[in-house]
Image (tube, rainbow, N blue to C red; front, side):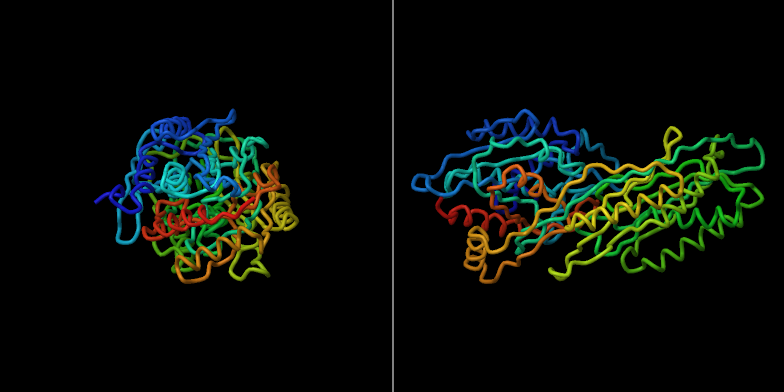
Length: 487
């Protein structure tokens, strides 16, 4: 049995088609062509705007011409994450899906249900002649995951609908009515390198891996370990107790919006200190292992001797300051919401560390539903790195989407859900970033809501989607479209 055999068939066939097309963020050319071809094959009006978004449209069902127009919206790109032992090129290889009981996942990679399932539902609705609906559009944006580029590039006036139905939420039975804003930060330490002595030194690679990682918005409140922090805790102890040890490079994390689950560094050790350094590394790792024994039970340490030590190492002064700054900076939840229990209000993700061409960079993504709180936390991080001697820049700031409760559209959704499933729809907001915040500023007349099936651990190789919730989400979308109020 494959995902093409699941129900509703049209949705799963659409999703299967997307899994066969490479679509990592910043590389959406193939999926854009796929979507254009899909529209033509299914007799649906489709066009690509001059920025790269794909827009489908279908006329109202006879008798529904006076209903408000609906824009179903999802994004075409996916987060390209894989386990260290998985061989996969996200620019060329299809996603290998697998059914595990009630869930669909992928083999060693992210699944791309975020937001491929949303795209699949929108396509199924736009092509289904049996559905009853008013004027209908589907907006499929590009490069949502690394900057919401498609949403930012969307031009006012090209969409005609009155209601935005975003399909990028990740908990069936919840209605999202708001989201956090965000801002990216980058610390840049410039450093000199020095030649490693030819005699008396050995090289080791220190690797921390096996952490759960996850979405830096949705999963940040789970208080999982950060591989960058764990590795720097080890390095700091080694450098403090054995000053003759050098660091040649450090790499951790892979995406601004994914909690880092792997990090590694090459170190150069005086041969006479090998035993002592190993003891320190193991001791500090065990401290972190104990600390995160419940959130990250599979965290492991690899301590591998290299054939020969790295030829050059980073300025000891710079690496010491950088490691301490990384440890000093916050990561995780800063404050929980006072108005919506269980919702994270403000957080930051110490996302990526890199050493390349004499620059050590540290990238963070800070989120909050309150702009002032977001900027205050971002400044706190900036101050730490500036005091440590780094240049710091902030970019890509966007505001949150403020909830508007009690609108006519929300009442339609609540009534429809209760009639379909015999229970109440939960009204909430998300700490993740949704494109609604950006697009709503360009279309201020829109009523905006977000729904979707249950997806867990997006942005990580553990990503999976619950099968029955996809069927529920499809049934819900179809019924909502039929019950859209008149203009």
